[in-house]
Length: 157
Image (cartoon, rainbow, N blue to C red; front, side, top):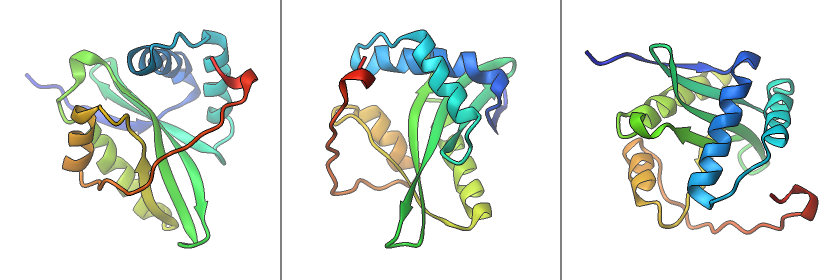
């Protein structure tokens, strides 16, 4: 029997799971072993500062199947916010079961309720074709932008 997936906003009680999922994503995608205490502090900071964003979790039964973080970017061009999906992670045994689609539906509903959301964005590794297919099947479109960054030494892992 297929279990129903519940999508909800994360609470402080989810901080440890969010931390573990963030660390697992970093290991899997970038072969990084992030410091547990640094990530936990970062997770708790966002949970206690909703002006910067929020976390969402997918539950199946008693299990957290996936998590993601939304951060905000103000667009003067659109006079609204872009919601950036970050720290998206679904446990391997829950993948390819439509969890991202359910996340995206939830976010679209929340964005409509907020009324000032100009769009939802994310970035993805160039060679992660499976994730790209999931994003496109949910209705997202590839952009023409390339991301650049400058990391500061005390924030690198």
